[in-house]
Amino acid sequence: MSAEENIKSELESKFGFLAGKVRIDRPRRIFADVECNNFRQVIEHMAKNMNFYFICAITGLDEGEKLSFIYHLINDHGVVFSLKTGVPKANPVMQTVTDIFPSAEYYEREVVDLFGAKLEGLPEGNRYPLTDDWPKDQFPLRKDWKTSSCEEGGVGL
Amino acid sequence: MSEGDFKIPVGPQHPSLKEPLSFSVALKGEKILGVDIRLGYNHRGIEKACEERTYLQDVYLIERICGICSHAHSTAFVQAVEEIAKLEVPKRALYLRSLIAELERVHSHLLWLGIAGHEVGFDTLLMYTWRDREIVMDLLAEITGNRVNYGMNAIGGVRQDIDAPEIKKILEGVKTLEERTKYYIDVATEEATLIERLSNVGVLSKDDVLRLNTVGPTARASGVARDVRKDDPYAAYGDLHFDVITDDHCDVYGRAVVRLKELMESYKMIREIVENLPEGPISVRAPRRIPAGEAVSRYEAPRGEDLHYVKSNGSDKPERVKVRAPTLANIQSVKKMLEDRYLADLPIVVAAIDPCFSCTDRLIGVSDLDKNSGKVMSWEELVSYGVDWYRKNRGVDLSKLNESFVKGRKYS
Image (cartoon, rainbow over all chains, first blue to last red; front, top):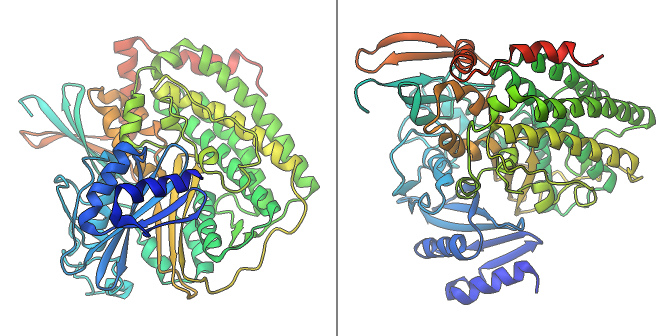
């Protein structure tokens, strides 16, 4: 079995709910979907027991009714594991992973600013990357937000 | 904070090399208690703009994320799109991408070396390395038509081929640069003043690198052999012979040594590429509409890992483009490096991760927290302060080295 298949089978046997949800695209590229309430235990297990201690980035996605977040993790062998989870757009509350990955701080602040995610447990700090006077209800990377909103009067700046 | 402690705003216009960024440095005397960092001054909404443009337009937009590692971003982007579209990129194109990538690394590392020299008062090094850098800038201009934003990449391959006279020029240029780099390595490993100035400054242990997910030469200088070119090969790197340079000094000195030795590896790779360039076409035709899918692409930029994620929806415009450049990954490490260090070390410590922020004004304000008054220093004044502080307090004086660097060696 390849290293990627080992990772897949280890995860599927440890977490029954991941059965059929792990996809190997090519060598060193694995994608997986996980429900929001199971997300935390999976990412913690991967970081602590499966050598995926390195977080590259968090990608936010606006998928209509829900906001999805892809946590791109890598291990020492160059395998990129993209773990995706989603929350309802009406109440986009996620738990922070900064206790597991201190370097995730700015990646989380980015999805807070650009997608309007709410990160529970993320320590107070400067916002990133928008300006301090950016309106609280404007999230530029959501699909209903158009750059034309930026024109005069659009975002109330 | 107790009485006598100061808080110094450094930036946003402008703490270090390029681009705005703001530090708020809490000081006790000259010692840094903690650093608070504010980023985002240069946020231009490029990810959003990519969703509103075609893939073809995005190649050019993405290339303009950064003037120094433009090829890094455009390569990472086209790789992701090609993976989704299942395009078989010709080998010659992959080799040419690696060629430009290594030339770009050479110009970036030489640029860094000069700035690092300047931040500690070793300006002769700045003059020399930036003069040498012109050799590689000329080569890039010769091959691609541009000094920066080369426009080399296309979805499905590259846009420019190279011919025999260009290969000859590349080999000549690399020969000269190799000799000069050897000389810089001699200076860096033999000159006691320089070693003393850079050692034990900006310390970041191997454990910190692993914990804080540090990338690039900064991680490698703390003994972590993390390099996308080796771990997750792309372009021609699977075929090329090179070593991942590491060092165990864990400080600014180590970071200088790693970059210098990486230059030698780049020269080796450039030679290998042009001497073994596969024959054949340089691109395949790419569809205008990209089938629905997603891909993660990684690239070892001069400053470390650059990650792009692209999601397509079957149209001619991407659904989502996500970019994570290396400097963002290293910000937590800078905070760690500055803790309990001296204000005099701030310029070189910040410069040592080779941060990528753009060039504007350079101003820092020093204010007394209680009275809310104080004086304002320019970045240049802060640099001079650092240079003087080391001369007075540590007896490290680089002015002699500045002279001997020119007089003591045969240097054309």
